[in-house]
Image (cartoon, rainbow, N blue to C red; front, side):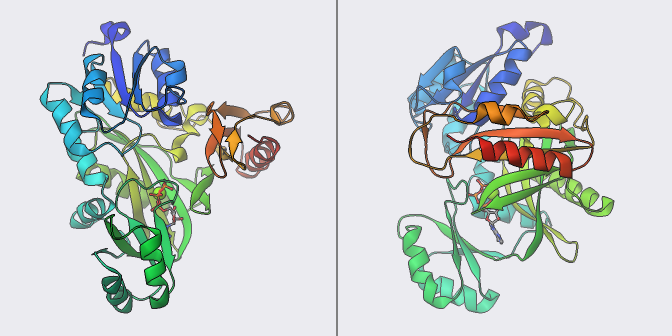
Length: 383
Ligand code: ATP
Ligand code: MG
């Protein structure tokens, strides 16, 4: 796609959440138009783009409609069925990441099998098709285990911790094991959780952002510290593993690679997200090129931008909903009184406990100062 025609290019994004919204903002700077497919006409991204298709992400007629108004298709979540993406590719519309990559990733079992077969460290895992099988697996691998739905999980909503055999049936029923495919993993006793955003272009050039530390609360990303306070060796190893894992699945675009750092310094991959990622929000202000812009550059065939930080340290804190109902944002005045606070509000019409409603990022000379400021600002804002 020639660069001088950028003003005529439309990228279609499957999904209209905050990741699509922030991608759209990056696209406008490059003079590129965005079209969105989302069931909600008021989704965070739908509100700010000119072209929207309203419908289910898995409705082929809606996907075709999106493809017809777009030069290129990408996605902001992994919930669209890979065979539907393949149909879009077969009508001559490029999809990045490709249907093949999405097919490998969207099922956590095939994702882990692909990584393991490429000699990339992952927690021990097994496919399970019944409660009795989980008990056998637990007796073999050891307890506790984590039971996971293989598809359409987010914010830890598809995970159940099982401490021993007597908790198996409860967990199985909670995750609807009779109607959904599940898998189990060993519970990793990690020291820290790390994440790396990886960008890979259509020619296979692969670059990584700095390794960050993510802190989850109730399985939901809460704080991101950039860069992670780890040794140079561990950081190099984590970045190399992240890059290898994206090469292994033939990824094109930006990918979030979530990892566990063990006490003995070993790193394991938890999961890969085939899209911009919460752990990369900090790149908007803290890096030369944001994850959103680099995603666009990668899928358009433009030169990739620098992934280096423009500051020694940055901290991102998510703004989560704490009640159910229409969202009314409060506390902005107090939060913005703190110098250096970068506030992002996703404009979700309704809030609920732990729903991601926005985030704040603060840059600094060391981790502590922006951490204090970002946590303080986040505590002042409510939805
Ligand atoms: P996300 O929160 O990234 O949308 P998700 O719903 O797919 O993801 P996971 O990434 O599988 O969920 O798990 C969420 C969190 O649960 C992890 O960040 C980690 O804190 C914890 N977790 C998941 N798997 C394991 C494991 N095998 N051992 C220890 N902790 C785990
Ligand atoms: Mg995760």
